[in-house]
Length: 265
Image (cartoon, rainbow, N blue to C red; front, top):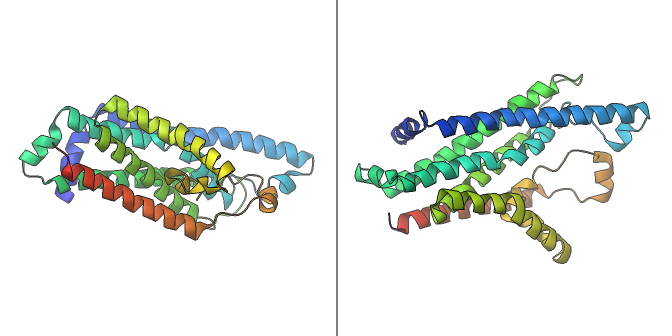
């Protein structure tokens, strides 16, 4: 597998789109959190001057230990970017027939798709490292002592990122055309599932939380107005959500492998 990764690296290292999108994603994680950080600090100071900051907001979102959850939550809005990168990379393989060339050169179909899945996992790890570094950076700016409490949200962020990347691979394998696959992925991940979730939550007793991507999104709820949330909202059922997330990941892997191994090259 290490040899296959080295070959993938040879494809990527001079691929300008890869570096542009990866750099944009890393900078966007810092940028979006910086914007939210400034807004939240302004709100906190305003409420604090009125004596209601702790009552309404709870702990400052970007102080320890809440910063782990807050950074993971805010950064999750950018997870379509590494998924977009996976789609471009895989559909280019089909467009330029390099997947056929790899197999002619001695790769098995299993080798080809396995290394793409591994690449998706490595991108998820890179995303998680960026989220962790950003959380530490913002958390250290405030006065609360460093803490690993709530660090489990970083683990949930890894699961969420991997899930988004696998959905991107599945769509790329099914569609094989870059523009169409990007459109389907964007509509589903950013728009369609949220609409279906709202309908299911309204008419099917809050079952929208168990949709494929929503399941991992639910692992990281917004850490704002915590004191009010405790009174009016049911806390996430993490064992159940993790079980659903694990099942979906296994299903993604099954259908990705099944589709590629059985399709014409």
